[in-house]
Image (cartoon, rainbow, N blue to C red):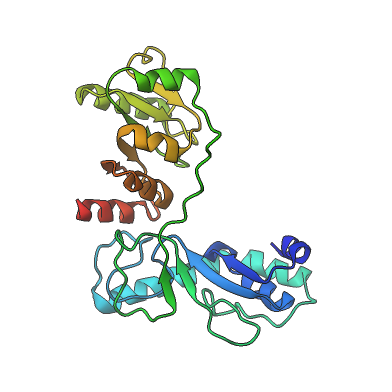
Length: 270
């Protein structure tokens, strides 16, 4: 981040909590640093607990405390890497990020806005947030109009009713073969044919399943989901928004982090 910023000399840096050192980089370069997140997780509210924790409601005080806890935990998890960077890069402006994890930076001392990249339809704006917080909607990529499906995918979609998509993204499985067999059996019991995305090892191609399912490595979600009957996935923020974007029935099988939260939100919304 430091090397790239010195090369680009940005006027504005929009940063995620995993890159909160952007505040110090902005201070060194005289730039503005604007914090952003894809979950309602780094600005405290009394209305619901932090999405990275497995709770639905801890009461007003507990809910607010949970957000502060995750903020400090994230800060602590990066402190060694941050400390090494500070030793290697001494010629900078005074530190701004210590204790102001999600504060941003403005060289003129103004309060910067904070951007929340998710849908306000899925997550209502907390009533105890200030005007500083902006829920923008999810940040979708522009569609790749040049992308064309492989012949087997085109043929699989063209024959019969729409398929069910199943994929777990970056979530690996301890036993991908067993998990894949379970998914295929579930599709058969439901009388459905499926498109299975292998992702980072959550699913793997099995012999003898060609008539029921098609295995894919990578395919643009914005192209595929609109052609599916339903989407079954791990519940990452991006995959959840993409499925709902196309109005598809969504079944979330969460494995951890913020995925149970998005699963609860989809369930609550029906």
